[in-house]
Image (cartoon, rainbow, N blue to C red; front, side, top):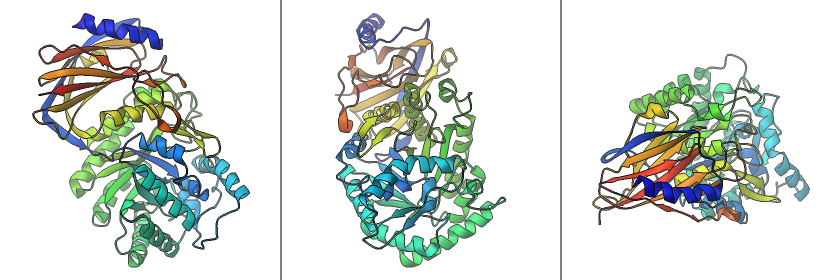
Length: 497
């Protein structure tokens, strides 16, 4: 069985140019479909964009078919979040003729990323932008075209509650049941850094402001849904928010960036792929708030390195392994969804480009695509023996919700070791009639161009289909697969009849 797997994999490795690692180790993965963990909902996947993007009404528009295609390829259901730092400098312009001229819109489009970064770098306030009814109507068409839903950020940083209520009223009437929630602000625990509030701004002050905005908006829009606190990382704000506003919030939201700032030379691919103490702390807060309030939790903004990402880290194949693994870490911890932040040509964006220049898939997109191919379902118990032999190898099991006497079990395996190959034996935990492997690969962890899933790149408008899937031999509910250093695989088992 092992020789068969080695032989079938060897030809593929030669074709895609993967270098064999100097050393290898053998591990065993045990799946137990009878021990179910947390569900992975169909709308778990999400993307996050700056509100300033709405200053160009043509971006989130059903006519932007290229971007629609990239998003639809990540799942028939999902959640688009429009917010970010620029939401605190975006102002509602209710008049229908308030759109800028074509030249001004083109200038705004080119400036969106730089304005967002200017705030991230704490270099003063961003450029003020306008959000118009036309932009919101186009956004509704875009949401309809993708099949996704929407989280919409309102301006509590420099705006008024009355203006936010007027904007929320139009957005609610336009979006209807496509609106998941409003978020009243972005990273309020860092308001003092962005000169939005004075030093010493604390949770008590924030809570009073949040309550005021909520009351004014709800008076005008009685059924408006809300989420929060949308903090940067601060469990000291997340926990009291859950306690105080559990009856007002549909879910809890927080952000997570694995690294930063990008100017720090210690922010590397190797560091990105190691376990994160900061993420563990966020998960602790998530677990506590879920237990105390019963509210679901979403990572409403996340990526590899803040301030737009780091070249040579955020735009590499390493980010694909990190991103897909993070999605399963979050699901295992009980989170209900994730939104990877991006836009324009930021180093960390999953989809790079503009309406004028077109769009392409960055390596992180491939990690999200692997997650999409695995699909929703229930996590099942997945335990690794001898993991100390390859501490950066992680594995997860997923059972289709429809699978009872028959269906599909999927194993997701991420070998984040830079120079260690893994021979992995998988105990399926159920009789399997078929086993197939789909590989996520690139020649190197720092490769930015040659990423493939199923030996095929993502094409224009997100077009993709696997060019190669391996057939693995199954014997006595067991199979084996070779995982080169710096690679991942989705192994699917058909069980039952």
